[in-house]
Image 1 (tube, rainbow, N blue to C red):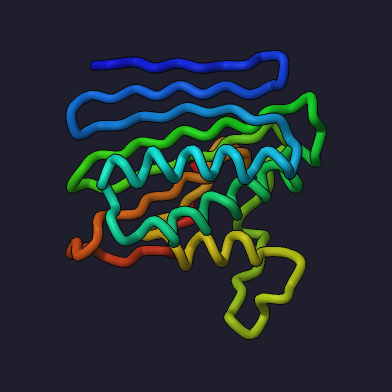
Image 2 (cartoon, rainbow, N blue to C red):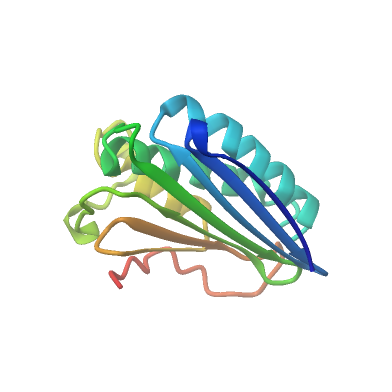
Length: 169
């Protein structure tokens, strides 16, 4: 297993990458600043693309990741730059990618967020959750609403398309 680690505590962000054969694990931390989203997403997506675990599904994963990070920064940490957002990503060829985004906020009750339909995408609340569920195969919440867990299977995988599994754990 090779381990590459890069961190920059002065800027409040760090990045750790672990590879072992067809397995890739990434841990990243960013401060609660909107400008931090694009650089971390671009770097994560390059690593995910290189892992070939979801070839062809990368745009969906990128959309869901951006929405999860935006929600964590804005709604979770309320753009408090002293708080961090943690991203954990695990990829395995033939099994897909799982991503967990955790914030240091107070959490929320996912069942209190109304379900949106396509007609209500202009709503100020719930749009990010709707888009994550649309883009990923599974989305659930944990940590009292401070974590979102997302999974996208490999393309052409025969699986139940269960986007409604937002169980609190």
